[in-house]
Length: 157
Image (cartoon, rainbow, N blue to C red; front, side, top):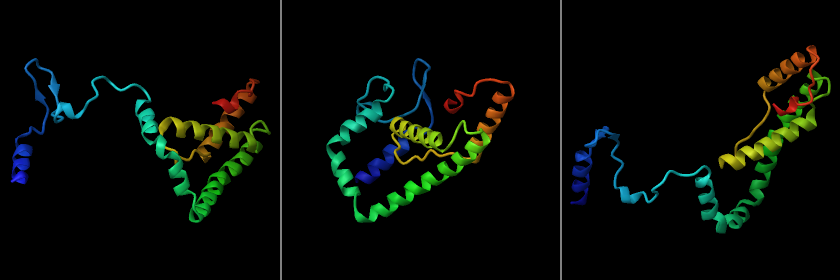
């Protein structure tokens, strides 16, 4: 039967690295014709291939996702992501004497979140401030202001 042939084939395949005649180690990866790519992939090629493959169904996905049930989830996530940005932005405004505030925090988290989602291909990744971000920003501001250095580029770090 085909199952016993597959079992024999699997049992005969080495499960550890093997050496070829010229001494290079390689892993058994199956039929080389199953992987048509001959060269190394270029940076971002997988993301571009995915966009090209799903471009025709992009609008259909949005139409399927916008339903009455999803509006509540979208609003919940919007405010769940916005709440810590506003809270830590307010605390940051007090800690940096108004140099960094709520507006800068919202802009930086929005831009960084969109850039990360676009580059990583993971649109559901949430970038938000934490207590460590606030602590680092406060310490950096204190260090710069104590030494009389400009804090103009503080939001960029």
